[in-house]
Amino acid sequence: MSETRVNTAIEDIANGRVVIVIDDVDDINEANLVVGAQFASSERINHFATHGRGLVCLCLTRQRAQALRLAQQNATESGLSRPAFLVSIEAREGVGTGISAADRARTIAAAIYSTPEDDALISPGHVFPVVAQDGGVLVRPSSTEAAVDLARLAGINPAAVVCGLIDDEGNPRRGHDLEAFAARHNFAWMTIQDLIRYRAMHDPVCGRTIIGN
Image 1 (cartoon, helix red, strand yellow):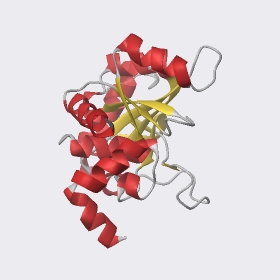
Image 2 (cartoon, helix red, strand yellow):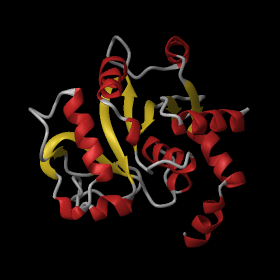
Image 3 (cartoon, helix red, strand yellow):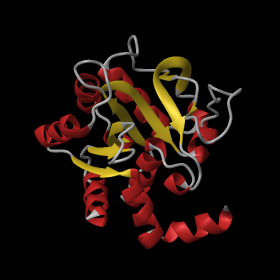
């Protein structure tokens, strides 16, 4: 069943659809909407802001973040327990205030497609990048790593946009409320533990990751 959930999520991510990634199915700490960054249109960003209601973040590989020369935001904090947030960014050209869905979509596109020589980004801005640890969920079982792992497994640009799911009272969606939300929007869901098991069984990168760590 967990393998089926991951296969469905990979297929949906490859085809530009949104999936829900859950930290722990038994004791839900966080659930996130996830879409491949290359599919993060203004309509998707608006949907995330309207229905997800959490912080919209751009998840990048360490290699991409380094190529863009993005500085770490929480440089005084270390360890795997905290998200590796980078300085917020904005597209240098083609945006207004930067906060609109269209502006954020343009910034995301600049972040995943531009070259360092393009000098396409400025800081601060309204898009919040976060770096996935090398090794993905096998090293850090979190939504950032799961989102990048899914994009990589789907064969698309290895970057993703995530948004935390917040209910009407301002709390993380859990349990039956989360199930109803997924059904209402027709979103497939999977847990991070599902993805860990899947990668251990099927991902050719897994063996190299374990040896490297």
